[in-house]
Amino acid sequence: MIEVEALTKQYGRTVAVDGLSFTVEPGRVTGFLGPNGAGKSTTMRMMLALDRPTSGRVLIDGRPYATFAEPLRRVGAVLEARSVHGGRRCRDHLLWLARTNRIPVSRVDEVLDQVGLADVAGRRVKGFSLGMHQRLGLAAALLGDPPVLLLDEPVNGLDPEGIVWLRNLVRRLAAEGRTVFVSSHLMSEMAQTAEHLVVIGRGRLLADTTVARFIAANSTSYVRIATPDPARLREVLAAQGVAVSDTEDGALAAHGVDPARVGELAAAHGVVVHEIGRRSASLEEAFVRMTGDPAGQTPSGPGRSEGGEFGR
Image 1 (cartoon, helix red, strand yellow):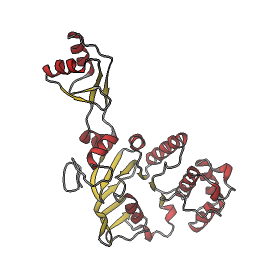
Image 2 (cartoon, one colour):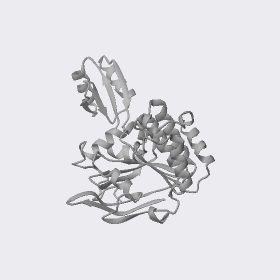
Image 3 (tube, rainbow, N blue to C red):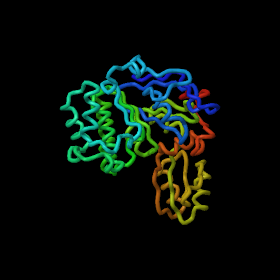
Image 4 (cartoon, rainbow, N blue to C red):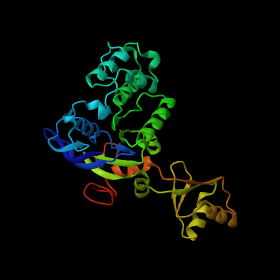
């Protein structure tokens, strides 16, 4: 597993990561969320000893990453898609990595085929698209067949088919018992991929919980009703003790009631209804509610690092 213990990183007077502690367990995909500037990339760089913490530490299977003699056999990582020298050929880049970590050469061709780059193995990397760079980074991460994977924004540049492929890949890797830690800004994708979430804001822990519990605690479901007579329907529902609010598209949102009951009340009072349907809570809604604003300057709600249900 990965253990992050009281991790802090300061750049002068700026605190990028502030006393962050959490554990990433094997056998599931753990999503790493936070607004831009929250400290996600800095945290992942410290996990890989690319940045030195001001204080605190990160242990991978009980050891700092820098102590691994052959790190690709222990941890696979994708941090920067275009970090490979453009003059290198695709296969040669992986071959170099394999030889420096005592990985069999046969493994190079296996991962090239696994990520869909076998046909371009002899091409120089400088001609690759962003999506191809991402696939090459994933090939490098998988090269040593590691038990731990750290992926920072791995879907950037991938087409829809590639995103589905990656989603299935990381879930399969987690099902094999590996520790999979994935950072992403795509809420809809994270909702379909991760089982557990670690959410940070301004370098502090906001939540450490399952996806389902995070959504339930930080968003609400409601019944959406489209009607040509919203004032009348609002009056009918209010008389039955149903709380009603307006949606952004001009429909009504009824809370604490099921769609069938709304339909029955509308029919009984002769109110024309064009559409009734339940709207489920979303990860995106929950994320915005917890982090406050896109810049993460006003984190609020349950699970704040100062305490709350999910604080750890």
